[in-house]
Image (cartoon, rainbow, N blue to C red; front, side, top):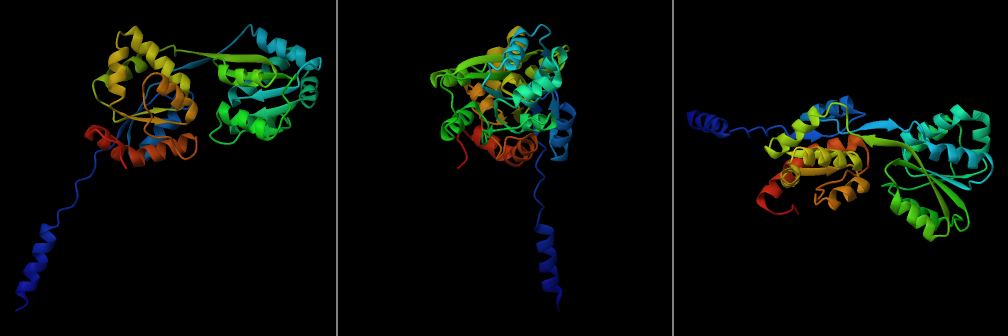
Length: 301
């Protein structure tokens, strides 16, 4: 009397096995400047983070390009200034203000057309009270910048355009500006080099080859240059590239993705916005599905 339903109910409860929890994702990031923040973001998403700093910014102590820019700026020979990165913009302003009066530099910049690639130089220029005339839309690559200049009909022919560079020459951007009739003045502000301690990076290369990571995360194009340099030095470049392609490749945006593709690494995802928080969250949400698809030999629908 009532035993049957109770037994049935009990049997149903006993038979409903909970789904096995998914193992946490093992994600390797090559972030340097924001290493601690990256590690914390990944851990909050339930991942097992490994952060191997891949590069170090080295200011150009004898920065002839920056000093030449300042001289031409103060003598009215610069028409347009293109700022590509926040770190580089700040370094450039601080460097030239060591040689020249700050108020004179700001007054000269006020006579120029100021163009920025993304949000980071915007923040720096606002701190310095520099007016911004044009800003490239997301995803903030040189292509969007050039397209914006075309769409807005910004005068370039017979104008001198100074381009603040960010670690390596901006060849495509400079070529595009020259094709539109501009005289381009590259202004290198800093360069990238390997970290002083490369042991974490060497360990990350070996652990990638050993299959210890589910995803590799890239927040800068130059990070790949450093990783490949270390892998080459260890005699493991080809092995690392093959192993890396077996992981989920998560890229912050098109500039990093382009560098990855040039070396034969195919990005599996870019975040909805090219920001570190979005990259971490969306990688942790999607990497399991993407990795399963990779291992099954096909891309997810």
